[in-house]
Length: 267
Image (cartoon, rainbow, N blue to C red; front, top):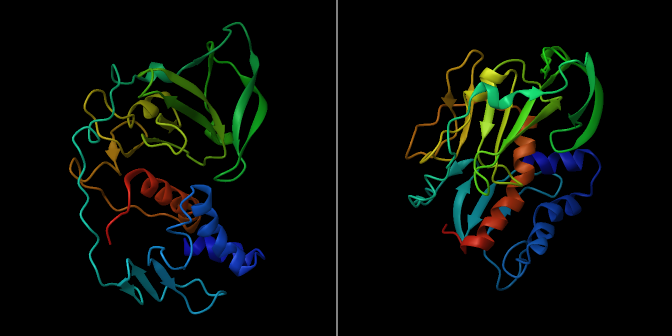
């Protein structure tokens, strides 16, 4: 979160206003500002000590009134989380995905069609883009040279197995595929892939599968990278600052939402 705040300040935001956007504003949005989002009597004693409002660098972290980290050193081990069996088996698709599930068919007699494409303006902002797209054997295919690949949403909750496939530009994937079963706005499985065979590989399985993220190298061969710890170890990944910025932008709202649904967390 400090990267996001630093970025906002670097872009000219008032430091106090930037901190408010990451704390109080989010708490007020979820009607939790009576217990979190600020420093006041009756609120949780969760504090971050920084040198000054211009320097977003956590020197000390206090949780529930206890110092849990100081100058980059963790002083208190996080509590162990337990997961119910049902939460570990939430992927309930009627069958495994096949490469043919990701085919986008159109008029086989057409040479080109007007394609509506998701344009990634930024990592958080998208727009609609219309492009004339070639039709090959009645199919619309991705084109990594134009940075246009396939994206699919697979319903795993309301109508398990329903799949919607489109095109996305600007994702930057040149080969292989990625999938995630915990999308922010929906409970769909979201898959992006450079070709249909790759997109099939990382798609989570059928009955009894755990939630998580997965990647597949070009040519197949699934590599899970974020499944629950009880089911599979997680290898080390490297993220850029931009990746962290996107994820951390969502962290504050996500954590507060979870707290509102599950109750007060432990220290």
